[in-house]
Length: 178
Image (tube, rainbow, N blue to C red; front, side, top):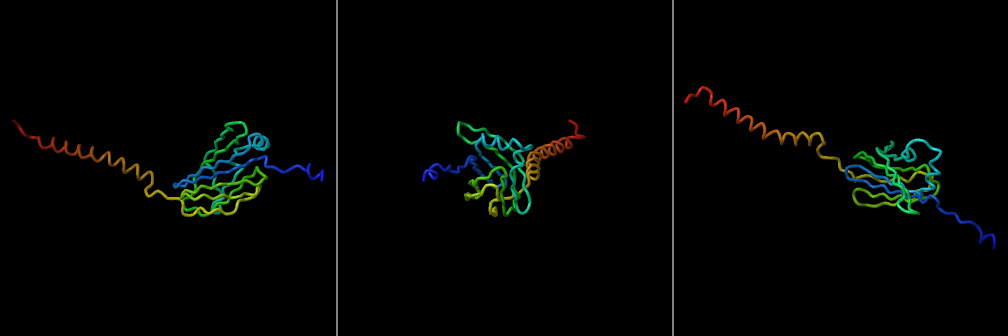
């Protein structure tokens, strides 16, 4: 009985939390939060970016974040966060997630662009289950280049009309004497 009472309890020293937020345009933000002391020790043997420790597997290929930002813990006992940003294909259907630094289970919250929230329990050093991405992204109806050309044309049309009317006015006065 004494041995049972003194048995150490397992606990999550990592305190890992993952929040994946999507926008309608396909952009995403992944906040990976961990205990800062644990994270520092865990990252020591690795070189390269924190983004090399995570995998976003979308429709059979890896989607790499375009930026990584470190947000230190704001107070004693708070978690430090790595914020990864990137963009999904508009026609993305499925996502599998992997975070290679942890061994304990952790929650992964997915905030879809259509307002649905999914909480996935990831079993530590394992892939997430397949996460549905369909129907939440809207491709732009007009490309950025087309929109810029349309705006430029709207500014140039009045100038062209004014130049044309000034040219006609000057041609009409040729050869007239007073």
